Length: 305
Image 1 (cartoon, rainbow, N blue to C red):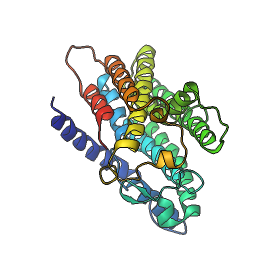
Image 2: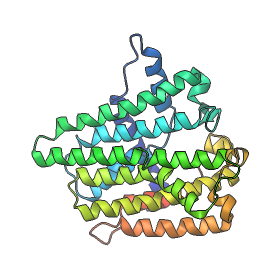
Image 3: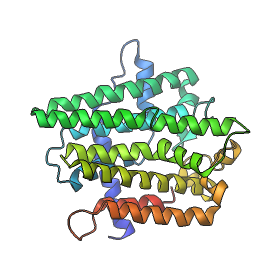
């Protein structure tokens, strides 16, 4: 499959994911209308919808047959991802003015309402994910939903994404902070990779995959996340602001620890290639034919935006 084919299929899948996500957005009405507006603005500001797409591709990789229970989780993981971006952009964190080419949520609604929007998205994510129970009537099906919920909560919490954000903020704010490879990998594995692991694991779990296969998806997600974040670090140095839709050089401006600042661009590119090759191997299906998930992984780590 050519790169152009992958990009077109990704656009098609992103459009499908967008339609699913919109079904679960909160209503903009009543006295809480403003926070709902801020939440929806944040979610609909754009984005590649990679996490719900990855979830769906893992579901299909393991021959999942009933997608109805998957859809609430596809929306939920995007709500969690978006809330993390809203909070990352706040003045107390990265203090970014633009996200995906548009004013960040705190720039449009104020820091207080942006904080509430992030909080609202996190809670709304789990309200949405619980709706998956409505589509699984058997004990086995409901048990899969329980397992998926545990994965979602664990990877989004202090032992996952929030833990990574904590270490990232600590390294940024403390001049004497430890700046080691272990710390850097911990940040990338948790801040970025954890929710990619979650997407792949939930897709496989809801497809009824065996525990060892779910574990394989976790390993693949870790490698994808690391490669994706290292690539993001490279783009922050070498990318184009008009293409990326966000400020370039913000990591250096904020004194952030990155893979590029520690190892240089050449080593970073080499490690991205190695991680992506391992991830592609882990996501091979039962046949010899290359699947779209593998093509998507390759695109993610060679992207220019």
